Amino acid sequence: MVMEKIQDILDYFPVDCVSTQVESLGSAGGFSGALLWKVHAPRGPLCLRRWPREHPSQKRLEFIHGLLGHVATNGCPIVPVPVHLRSSTPSTFVKQDGYLWELAPWMPGEANFEQNPSTEKLCNAARALASFHHASSDYRRPTASSGPAPGVCERLEKTRIWRQNDLERIDAQIKTTSTLASPIDIGQSQMILNHAKNTIEAVERELSALSTLDVPIQSCIRDVWEQHLLFSGDEVTGLVDFGAARPDTVVVDIVRLLGSLAINDQQLWKIGLQAYESLRPLSSAERSLLPALDRSAILLSGLNWLRWIFLENRNFSNWSAVTSRLNKIITRIENS
Image (tube, rainbow, N blue to C red):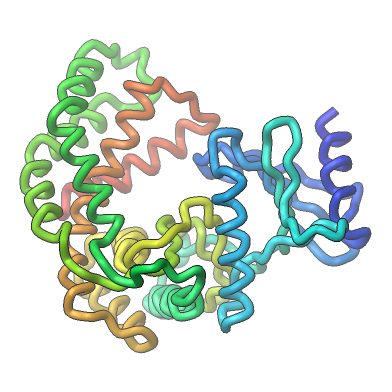
């Protein structure tokens, strides 16, 4: 039945995209709820994605697909530009049974930075991000091309909600959860929670002080990390997964990238920033956002996982991958 559905979806696309050689990848290690298939088609290898019902909306997906086409046309060829349907409409996705489906080229390379890290890879990743930002800078430019950073304002609101309500709820839930019944290590959860209790007020003050700062606003990825960077040798040959893309300050992308690749090594952060700025220099206002956005990312990434596990009771297909993510967050906490 699943393969029949896949073939039905592929029939919406050009003939050279249709194939019976389809490889199911499940979630491919991701946590968004999307499902992926590799299609071995006459056109070449393709990636079929079924987005989860919850997100993105059709309007958001149109924005994302338009962004990918725009940046590829404007000097950043490492993104997967979705394939247009074979019909005369300009659509690049299919809606069926409440799901949105897209088909895009299979980008070359492997997400292997963690297994084979190098300074050269780090620099190439930072330059690839700068190239993306150059290419996306004029995509659907908002009426006000500068202003308070949405990422700062959003995180400020989240820290306030956590401090006023949800920290206590998480604390109570962890205390009443049996170690044997928990899919993750309770000690890890407690460490993340303790870090939040100790730092959330300071992070909130930092974000509040920056919440009115005027910085350039443009289309950003907002979820660029090691698993979304594909390398062939030391070169970045693929940049994937744009489900979180929207207008923001480029700094949200920089701290996400360097927090994933450089982790807590300040020398590597410096090298990565230099590589990025060799193509796109940061303003003094943008630079002032770096520490607060990184600290808030560490805080909120850990709390988000605690919310999903203890308050929303989400079930993940690969709990070892969840534990790995939590370990990385704790590494950042311990050395921040």
